[in-house]
Length: 315
Image 1 (cartoon, helix red, strand yellow):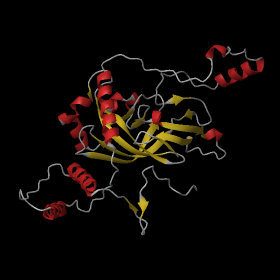
Image 2 (cartoon, one colour; image 1 turned 180 degrees about the vertical axis):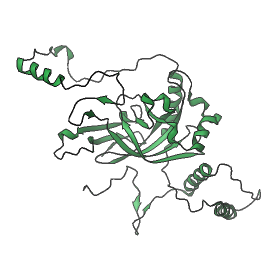
Image 3 (spheres, rainbow, N blue to C red; image 1 turned 90 degrees about the vertical axis):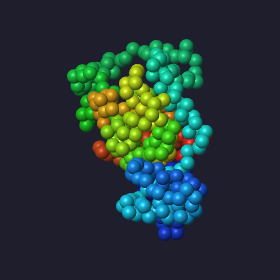
């Protein structure tokens, strides 16, 4: 793939003869996506229609009402179906996370090892030259500051060691209800291997969707009120841009207030559960690239990932 080409996610749509991207779904799915967009844009809109009518008359009445409401020409995107089994799995995860927030459990697990650890020796003592190099490197470290999981200070050429970010187009909806959706384009997410799950702040949401999460009782089973602080689990689907490809992932994410984030930072943290633990990737910091670019962290190359069907997909 050349550098000028834009990679497509696994569920890639096909271009039509005129170059436009096209998708093919059952009409019920297309109308469902339209309905979500209408409900999100105009939650109080009402249309009167006879109890007994025809499909054509119903569609025409709704179309005429949308024309008079000024949203008929609004641009929408048709998102792919989430497999029923995958959605059920995500719902179970959201319930388990909500219940687990009130229990104390271990947050660590050892990695798998393919050798006998009893045969690994202790480090050999450093030579005088290596000790001197360590001392010289230590002199360039900045003064100690309270650790912050989102900002790691170090004295490298640029003065800081940045956390890598990835860009994604996101679609959010309730775990048990998809009557409203929230779409966030070009969202910048911290690629944070220390985060247990994906988290986003509610100031990134529209006021309508934020009110929907806060006040609709359909979300009550997925609210966090203790342990991790106030928050609500939602279903998140994302097209995520990596160095070599775009992949589509669906997981659950926790929506919290900005004050619940480290340093009260607004934004999104792309975390482990259902996110990073579903991706097999290689990271190459900019210092190792032949072409140095101070504006990028480096490469994050995805080799494989777990797709929506729970199968391993190779990039």
